[in-house]
Structures are given as structure tokens and as C-alpha cells.
Amino acid sequence: MIKYESIELYGQEDCLYWESVEDFKKFSEEVVVRVEAELSKHKNATLETIALSSGSYSEYGDTYTYESIVLDFERDFTDEEVAEMQQKELEKNLDKDLSIKLVELDVDVNLAYNKFFLEQVKKGIIKVEGLKL
Image (cartoon, rainbow, N blue to C red; front, side, top):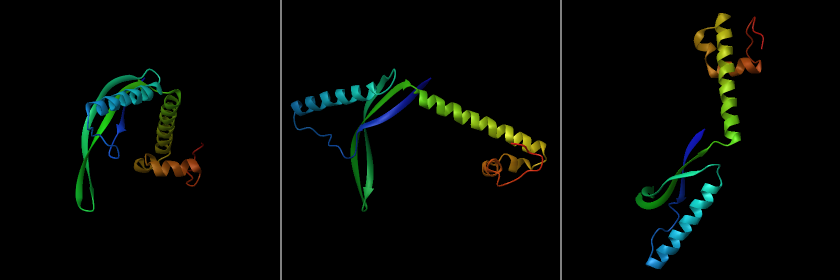
């Protein structure tokens, strides 16, 4: 499974102005090192784009602009991310099954599918006659 990510390599607090070609060359080399370092952190990372963009922020009524450099890439999901997605899907299915059981026990449909209500039932705070967890 593939995940797309965007990471701001340089942003509002960074100086993205150069006074000479040599300064820019040094900075460009630094960008390459940071991109390679970021991509190496992930399994099967593939560069999509490196983009220079601008933004703005307001402070004390004044508006300031800034530039940023953003790295866009795709990578494989980590085992932890896959496990987390599977756990969320399992919990979602269990909640759906519980909601169906509650409706079968004549609990109002709106309540049976209400997340807060379901949590209270699972914790045992709300008891439903005939329901076995």
C-alpha cells in the first residue's frame, strides 16, 4: 500500500534568500542532502516533487510573506500504520455489529449508531436488556 506525503523542508523561520551564486550552490547541495535523508527514512520512498511555494501570516495587524520548500513523495505504509488501519477497520466492524444487535433488541436506530452511546454500552455504563458482549 502506498502513502503520499508532503513535508516542509524549509519554512517561515528559514532564510531563503541568497546574495551570491556560491551561496545558492551551497544551499542547493544542502537541499539535496535533506531530501535524501528524508527519503531514506521511509521504505521504498519515491520523490514526486520539490516545490518552492509562498505563504503569509499576520502578526499584530501586519501581514508577512514567506517562502517554503516542500518535498512531496510516496512511500510504502509501515507495518505499524498497516496494523493501525486494520485495528481501526476491526473496531469499525465491531461497532457496526454491535449497532445491528442493538437494533435487533429494539434500541432506537439513532441511538444504536451513535458513537457515544456505543462507547457507553461497551464500557457497561449503559445496560441493554438481552445484550451479551
